[in-house]
Length: 481
Image (cartoon, rainbow, N blue to C red):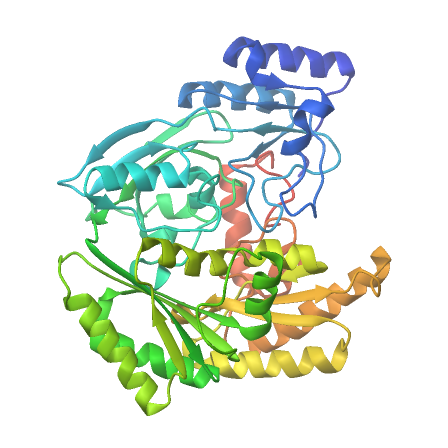
């Protein structure tokens, strides 16, 4: 299937005029200089071209935009905050697509604290949703390093994970209802606020993680939770990943679901972040091979949570599970600890040509996975550096491979190195029963790997769903397949 193209410059101009009639002259971009930031991903790995960029204000305007583009036979690329890791929101270089940005659709339509739900439009910034929930004594738990700029529509379309999956699950577990514009311009209103509805297929799940290939998400109903009134952050030093699992097990046994975050980071990644962020300091006295970033929360006000965490960490230190630990004394110290965790991507980009794998394996297999990947990459690519960071509690480990700029000066050499690193990580991932993408998605960068490792029957089902929703193949062409 092909997304088609405007047949002439006149056809493109007619299309842009029609779009301006729908959304207003100031909300359609066509000059390349004005479109620039929408044509390249934030990691600057993918660059595309487009007929234009359009900014609708309402679901009805999105529907009209989609109809006009469908009639013109051009592709439609939904783009939220453009913070994705796999190039999924960037148009292809052929210039036969229209980028549709829902950033003006940023209203909170309803918040229902009693029902613990919030209905928001797709362009709402994640941090704004968190703030509105907090103002209503509620919590929306999704938390990402890009939460100040990413949009909830993109979070849903990519099934974002973040740091609180251990307790609350990924985006797939935080959505009750969805409104979306289909590839033919029809509006599907699935904005259910129900937690129980046993009336057939759960259609919203098709859109969660679909990466804009089935339609444009325009609004969602989100689950809220009681706002924590006690929150503590800790950093622990650990000698190896088996001990990290032992620490996680101890904390979960003693603190239960109050453990909301448990992140790990290798020493070389930790040191890299500090080197590129001189304002950050190591909260611990000595270097350690591994670190655990821990957050515990409770809705009960008081000192019980602090006492419980201190007791649990003290027992871990006494037994040798951890070698050092610190509990943040205030919110500023907690934020400084989490800044180390959230500054990883920028530090990696600054240090060389980097690629980041998004692997998940069974939690019990994480130590084996890291050991095997470390040994195999060191043997095959001795000049590269390998770093590790991730969400130990759900088995999602990011293998970051940084290629020295002087050694990998040519694109061909870099591409060869990337293929070699990918092959190693993927082979070990699949052998351990894991997935090549845990939370970042497929986009452009993982299309070939998806087709290689996804079972053929699943690929067949996915293609059938795509053909059913989008028989002309105009929705985010080139992504997933």
